[in-house]
Image (cartoon, rainbow, N blue to C red; front, side, top):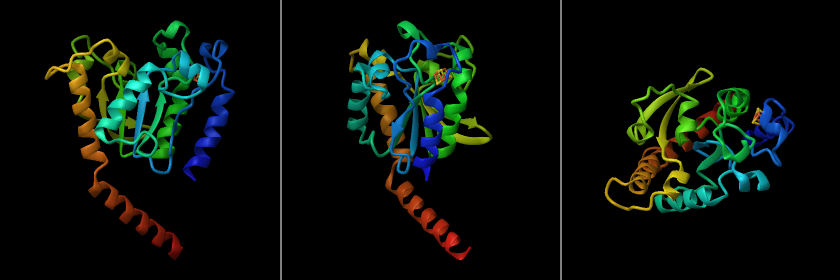
Length: 218
Ligand code: SF4
């Protein structure tokens, strides 16, 4: 059912000309993941060159590094996550999408979240974070990453955590105690332990059984 709903939104998105990014895109990068099993929606900034060519999110160098971090944390990209971004078309020269572009694309992002109804949302990088929260000049991503907060999407509250964007980690190779790569690994473990643990999985099975029984009684 979730897949079918997402497909309807995907089809609308694939023909979208809601902002200037439509003019130069090769492919709309809507998002990917198993909508039926994904417990977390991970939101990146915008498609890059490889994503634009392939129509898939996070498949360039940044995406490959993200895959490594996910695997090391025991998070399955295919089963646990649904991955998308703040805008679905590539900004020229990989510039940061404007507020107008993000606003134009927001209806698709909100629909994806509403259909998947994740346990938690992961905001990957500053652009994703700023799509949900205004930051003052003193609040940097280094300060706010790794903290659980609540974000509201169309009237529904979701737990959310900001993590570094993997493109930042491509430029930072240190594995020292508080280096970005070490913190990224720590944040992903925290996400895994909090929202992808066995107790959460058991609760989901119980809730599914209750829902199925209620449907059977109707
Ligand atoms: S970025 Fe979003 S709003 Fe802009 S054209 Fe692409 S799909 Fe439409």
